[in-house]
Length: 130
Image 1 (tube, one colour):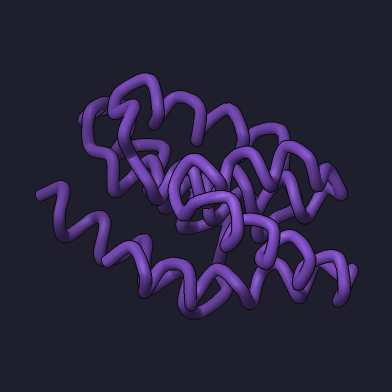
Image 2 (tube, helix red, strand yellow):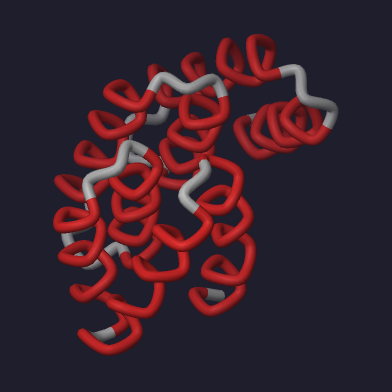
């Protein structure tokens, strides 16, 4: 069952077993290519493993499947910020939360100027999107 596999992958992510999670998620998206939750989780695993280009490719694939996917847009912004591309980050954030909030997010990330700061912002952003 694909939902059980997704749960297993998320448990592996929680335990920081990203290689295991990645293998499970890659099998899910291979079998269920329109299962967006698996694509999203796969991009998260890739970000955690610092495979930013692969994460971007996955998020872009997600947006091809669902152009209005706010979570994918925000995560593209987070990846851009983690890579130091503040212009791309602001553009992605702006598409979802507006100009002022986008600038505040980018400023906060720049202020902390660490990968950790951008990663910790993902949780509050995710709560906004749910």
